Image (cartoon, rainbow, N blue to C red; front, side):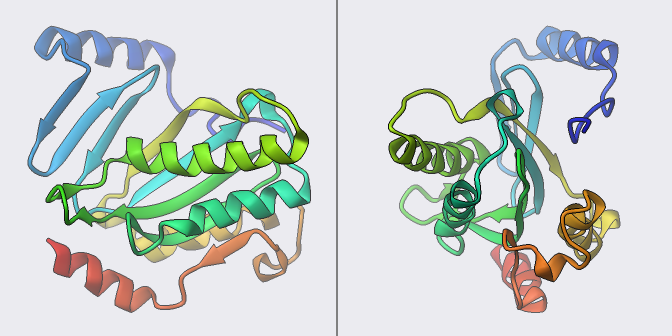
Length: 198
């Protein structure tokens, strides 16, 4: 099985983009009121009040046992409606797909960052998995892939694409049979709530 992002980005293009970026803004974080850019090994872009498609992968493509996938899905759902509006979550055997829209942190009066959100999901699930296994160490690869959904892409189409992952991998015939697939049932309400935040 190929990694889900295999061949998606040409290495030379990323290197050229980063070289240009650092020449323009040599800091690790570029921010304006509606957009935040940061990098680790991959460039990351966050836009306020927009849905983000996120994929993160287990360390060394470790296949999560069923009980661990339960933990991961619970971790993804934990901060739904507090730190983010979760549109869909699918926990595959060795990676996770999410579509979420970060919410406003009322105390700080700013949008929760993807860094905070991913740290919470990966940290909580990793700790719980390691505790059950009686071990220490990373469960997840450091990086995650994130992509701001353009309005032309259509949130419903992307949600359906994510939900079809277990079907495409031959794990189930219908996505509804897959135990680790979750979608919000109130898609219309979610769209209105996110628009109302703007």
